[in-house]
Image (cartoon, rainbow, N blue to C red; front, side, top):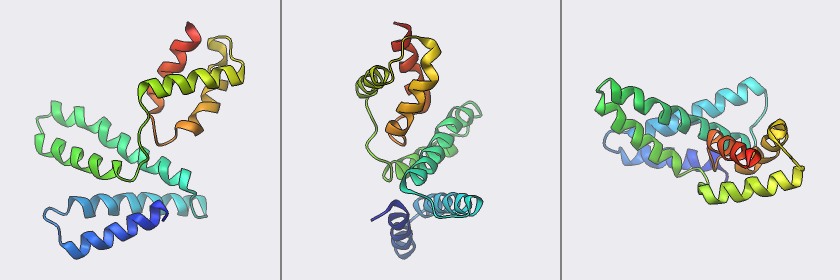
Length: 150
């Protein structure tokens, strides 16, 4: 079952359950709307990788908002965002550990034949498709920079 089909099935389940607070339902609807808007903009149906990218983007937006709401004293919104992140993580593949990212980066550096910082673009271009939806791009970039600098 594709991610889009899973989202639709889970939305129907949440509707039937009339869940308390409806956080799950609203989160799924927001993600489905983001996917639909992207399909309209591109004029075609999205691939699974593109859907994963949108899910990761939605999750990243929520993670980035948490510190702002914490500083503003909005603990209610922080709790809601954390719940939404939990819901979104159900649809993303298992995240990579730092050691797995480091190993993948080392393999990619060897494949590309990178020798220094000037080859960062080549390495990132090759590694991002392998980590899409499973690791944050900033973390991957940081590890690749460390390995290229060493």
